[in-house]
Length: 71
Image (cartoon, rainbow, N blue to C red):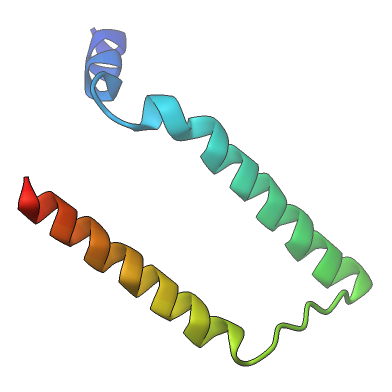
């Protein structure tokens, strides 16, 4: 019975199609964290990178919202 309920919950969700992408990101993040802790690897990003990414994500969200509203 529990197996039926578990498969019923996953049917129709996006998790079935993106689980391998999530796993790849988890492995990549674990590798970067491991290298930082064990070897002291420093990843230096320019200070302007975060605001630029914020603007890009904001524009993408606005475009997606407007296109969904037009439907």
